[in-house]
Image (tube, rainbow, N blue to C red; front, side, top):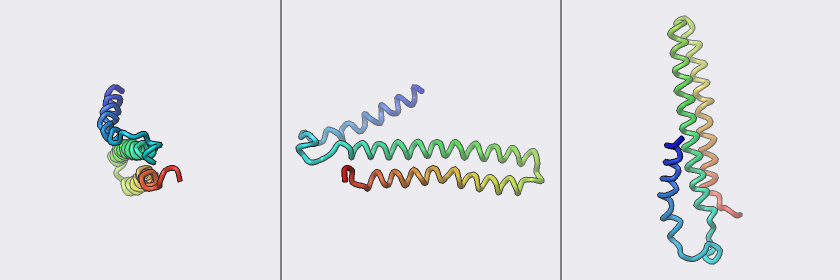
Length: 110
């Protein structure tokens, strides 16, 4: 848990210069503070989805290999079910990629 907090603090610390580029308030310059936060949300969301997807795929493959080792005769059926399961797990990352692209390219406030 401490590592996650350190990584979040580091990520927010590295984005500090991006917020400090303009001395004028956001209302006067016509900009919005929503844009930097959408980039952060897209990045954190994609990282979280990729991490969860990787953990899920690793667990599915490990379980499938254990099942194939116990029952070599059912290896073909287990492999087919594993590939379908991996495709469904990977769809999580693809859905998050779509959400991240929407967050990055849709103009906030329209």
